Structure formats: C-alpha cells, structure tokens
Length: 141
Image: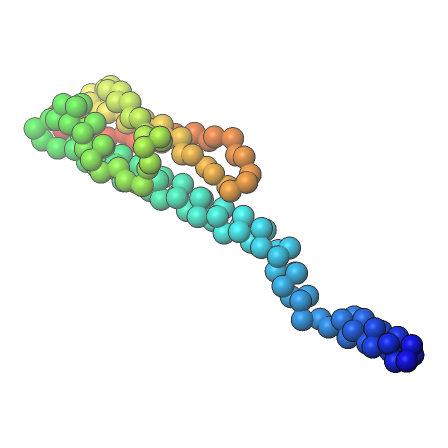
C-alpha cells in the first residue's frame, strides 16, 4: 500500500517536470515590457516628426505670403504661420520671429522658428530638445 502511494505521489512530479506548455507564456511575460517600450517610443518619435513637418509647412506658407505683391505686413506672416502649422500639441506651440533687412538693395524677411517638442518614451526620461529653423524670403520691390 505504501509503495502504491509513493508511486502516485511521484508521478505528478515527473509529469510536471516534462511539461513545457507554460514556458512560452513566461517568456512572453518577460519580453512584453521591452516590446511595449519599443512600440511607444516609435509612436513618440513619429509624433515629433509629424510636428516638425507641420512647423515647416507653416514656415513655408509664411515665406510664400512674404513674397506676395502688394507687400503684406508682418502680422499677416504670423497669421499665415499660425494657420498652416499642424501636428503640435498645446504645450509645445512653436514661436516665430520675423527679422527684416536689405541685401544688395533687395528687402528680405528672415523667418526664425523655435520648436520644443515634448518627448515621452514611456518609462525613459528624455531631456527636451529644441529645433530651430530659419528661412529667408525676398520681398517684392
């Protein structure tokens, strides 16, 4: 009788030692945080590039308005930039500085934009970066 009980008690141990069905679930649980950080990082960087494209679009529109005749005031350049900028969120609004000058007798406008996107890489803290863009547009005489 004791031998029979010992054989029954030892059988589940041998069965569990050879059972590998839970190994893939354990491996998945170990790699899931790494994959999640990687995917969220891709989304965060894509949002930064989308915001950059929107800022450059607004800057191009402001440069286009600067070249129109009759000459537009600087407030129209600022309005065109604000209207055509896309992809930024409320906390990271780009700022545009307008500097006028003359080169070889031709008036020009330098558009300087500063954009600081918020980068959130899930659990990794990233120091803020500042993107600076500059474009020169010559005004009609």
